[in-house]
Image (cartoon, rainbow, N blue to C red; front, side, top):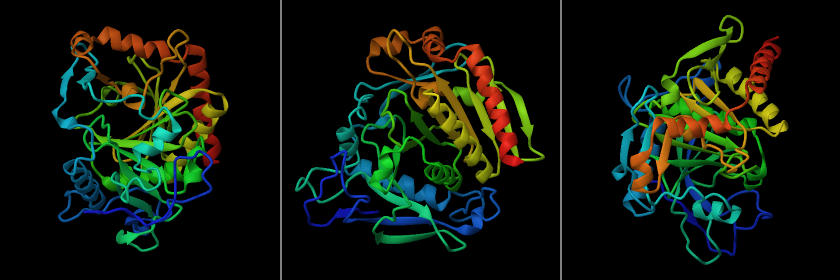
Amino acid sequence: MVSATKVEGEYSFLSKNSPLDQFEGVKTHLYRFGTEQHGNDNIRSFACADQGGPSLLDTIILSQWDGSAWKGHLDYDVTSCKLKVIEGGRNFVVQLNDKWNSFSLKGYDKFFELFGCLKPNCMKSYEGLLLCVAQGEKDRPEVVPSTSPPKDGLLLIANAYPVEYGHIFLVSSAINQLSCSWDKRMFGLATKIASEVNNAAFRVFFDNGTSVVPDRMFFQACYFANPLPVESASTVTIYDGKARSGIIVSEIVDYPLKALVFTSNNIKALVNVVSEISFSLHDNSTAYSLLISNNGTKVFVFPQVKNLVTGYSLSAWECGGYFVYHTKFDFDKASETEISNKMTSVSLQDGAFEDLKHLCCATVDDLVM
C-alpha cells in the first residue's frame, strides 16, 4: 500500500495565503508517465500483464482507494447506496445517499481538511493521499517509492464523501496553483491520467464557476460501471477536422442540457482546443463543467447559466445525468421530467449556444493553421 507521512513540524495548510508552494514534508509513492506513450501525441497505455488487462495506474489507484476505505478513511461505503434508472428515454441514474455532503468543498479551509491537510499537531499522516502522478523522462512508466511530490505533479486524494466507487480528487502538488481558474498543464495531466488508467469506467470531472468551489483549480474522478446518460445521447457533428487536426466537434442533441463533445486520439490537440474554449468561457464569466471519458479521447463541455431564482447550477456528473438524493422521499419521486427541468433551467439560450459553437469551430481552425 502507498503510505503518506508528514515529518515533525508546525506546518499548517489551512491558510488561504500559505507561503508554502508545496506539500512540504509529505512522502508518497510517485507514478511517472513514460515518454513512449505520448511521444507521438497519440494516447496509449501500458497494461499490467496480458494485452487487455488492467493498466498499472488503474491497479494502483483502485488498490490504494480500497485500502483507504478498509482503513476507515471514508465516511461511508458508497457501493452499498441504492441506485435506480429513471423510467423514460434518457435513462437518468439516481442514487440514494443521506451521508453525501454536497457542500463539503464550499469553504477553502474545509477544502483542505478533506485532503487531510490538517492543523498542526493534529495528526502525522495524510490519510487520504493515495499517490502523486507526474510526467517522466523514461520510455516506460515507473513508480518511485516514498518520495516528495514534485511541484509539477498531481496528487490523487481519496474523497471521504464519494459519489461513486474510486472517487478521488486530482490536485496540484504546488499549493499556489489552487488559486488558478484554469491551468492547461494540469488539464493535460488529468487527460493523460484518464488515458493511462485505460478503463472505460473511469471518468474525470471539472467544475468552473459552478456550485462546487469557484476559482479553485482541481479535478475529480471516479468509476461508473455503465455509460452516463449523456454518453449515450445522440450527436450531430458540427466540425470534422479528422483529416487536418484529428479533432471532431459534435453537438449533443435530444438532451435537456446543451453540450458539446470534443473527440480526438491526439491528446495534445485535444488539450489545446479545450483549454482555449475553457479560457474563453471563464473570461466571459460563463460557468461550465467538463467530463473526460472514453480513456481520455472525449471531452464533454457543459456551459451553464446560474438559475436566477435558486442560484442552482449542476456538477459535472449531474450534467452527465447522474444525481444524488439525500432523502428516500426525493429519491422515490425523482422523475425524468424533474431532472430534465433542472438541466433546462441552467442550459444556455439558443443564441449564446450558437455563438459558442462558432467559437469552437473557429478555435480548432486557428490552432491547426
